[in-house]
Image: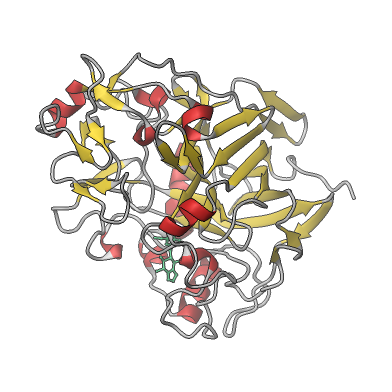
Amino acid sequence: QQVGTLTAETHPALPWQKCTTSGGCVTQSSGKVVLDSNWRWLHSTSGSTNCYTGNSWDATLCPDGVTCAANCALDGADYAGTYGITASGNALTLKFVTSSAQKNIGSRVYLMASDTSYQMFKLLNQEFTFDVDVSNLPCGLNGALYFSQMDADGGLAKYPGNKAGAKYGTGYCDSQCPRDIKFINGVANSVGWNPSSADVNAGSGQFGTCCNEMDIWEANNNAAALTPHPCTVGAQSRCDSTANDACGTTSRYNSVCDPDGCDFNSFRMGNTTFYGAGKTVDTTKKFTVVTQFITNDGTATGTLKEIRRIYVQNGVVIQNSNVNVPGMSSSYNSITDQYCLDQKAAFGDTTSFQDKGALEGISKGFATGMVLVLSVWDDHAVNMLWLDSDYPTTADPSSPGVARGSCATTSGVPTDIEVSEANASVTYSNIKFGDIGSTFASTG
Ligand code: IDC
């Protein structure tokens, strides 16, 4: 994919802090964010003819994937006006629906180290902390902050067809091996593109793009999940849906990644009074989310053995809720391989987390480096019910693992909430990363 020059690309600044036990926190003022390429205007290199409109490709400009990548350019973004993405100080707000000349739904941005490369995070034996305001983010929406193992340059060096790179937000991948990505490995995903029947802006192509994914935060004001998703591949990796269901389209578990993950959602794990409006972690107000990546030997060269969660609100440190599920030890309040085994057994879930390498699998991605992703999205597949309602909807909600939040099973329908909750938004702020214990304090 080429670079278009009709709109200048100006990355919004998002300073963050790097912290050490000995030296305290130092502001990284070079931090900025970039909008994923899928949201951008894609037009002919020679002018302004759309290469992609709604959910289909222009057959003349895009007779095949390679020609399409040569003919089509990604352009700069009007972050605030078109996409509802605004940065102020150390805070980033993502608005759900923005109605300008064209209506935009949701967004996904990546943290950059420079204008041409993503910031790489090596998470082992480190701690990641941020503040979040989900008070304006209701049922069916997902304000997500997570890490994906993308290439630092968005694949620019590896793939000659990709001339845009990280500057234009290319190279996305995650553990769902998404096939709605318009360019993968420098080639358009236009061949065999199937416009979505549910989403006027999306479709899916022959290829998908897979990689390790660490979901630090997938949440709204009703429910929150912390979820590692390992893959058997150690870098961004293209899958071909026409070869042995390699993207996991027919059967969810056929890809190289674990699409379910091993989740810790306090409500699902049996504490229904911990997270939500007026609860222990009160989602009507801003709070701090701390995530610690503990290794077996307490060094950055060890292997991931535990993912811990702590909250801070009003200056008070709040330990994560403990598990309260029949058949599971109530001593668990973090993610370990044993927790995952016990949870899958107690809920009768598949063992795809274990099959795709468990914590040791994702640990390899953490050692190599991961890209920070911030997004807001709604769910055209299952209305986000897997996060905040009873799921599967046909299962007995009193059976362990089915209830994940108190949202109605009828909630989260995109065509409903894109109208009724158009003004929803999420604000992430005060990002800190560094030594365990160095990024937060109790002030109360
Ligand atoms: C969740 C994943 C999440 C993904 C979502 C939709 O954790 O990252 O976006 O699926 O694909 C299930 C569901 C499965 C859930 C998983 C955890 O089938 O969709 O994964 N789970 O909630 N049943 C039991 C557990």
